[in-house]
Length: 312
Image 1: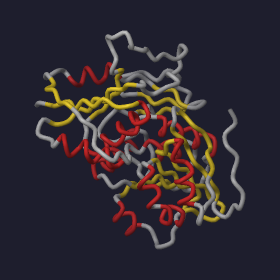
Image 2: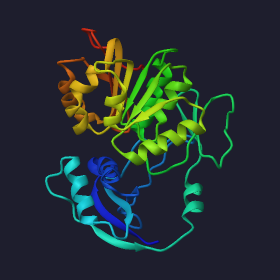
Image 3: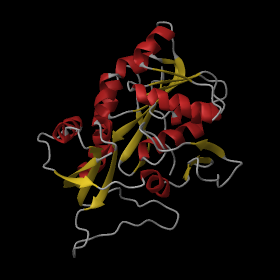
Image 4: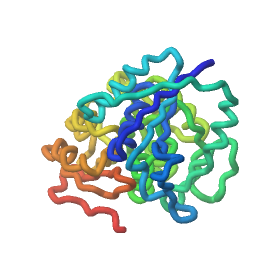
């Protein structure tokens, strides 16, 4: 099988958002590199030992997206650019990718990830660093959500702090199903995941079975047919990009039970006010936490005031 890489040079402000949008548009994988690598302007990004870098990209970034050789690369770039609000699709180049042992290469790039206080996401080819922790066995695949992205981490950390035993949870835009599985392992009662991508539903169901989590995953039409009109949940979590989140405000808020919580991510810090404004007629939202320029918003159905942000 052959692949083609799409190479885009872009400013840091757009690198992470474009990466996510490229995945949504059909890229198989995306990485961000220093476009000045090998020059006097090269700038390494390092964090403290055991910590991630505080910045997610470089001032002059190179976004590299892997696609099928037969894919329409121009259409993928154009769709991604439109999704993040770029007026004009950025210029790009392509390069052929030599055939490799992709399984071994992929496995070498993914190690266990520690999230929050007591959560570990562990690929199947690794031993859990702390068997007594909340362990999620999860391999990287076609569905978004391995715990490596700040938006996923923010939602997982929120669930670790706020999930309550017996409460019902809806994970809308579930991807790999990772957030629903965290909720279930934290003791939630009925947990439901919804995604528009059939492949994500297949992946989420497989992951839930592997992790011994009883979770119902649906495509939107299946979800509508399976749940009574007006059915609500104690907690609704949605990790999606800001544009669809704004459009879904009435629907998502309508799924939150009185006194229930709504948590949103997939939102850049600069987008916080516009997303909160879209939800203001239904639920007042505030920033709970921020990581690498991404935020998590949360609010309580029927609460007039703004809930507090996470300390620290």
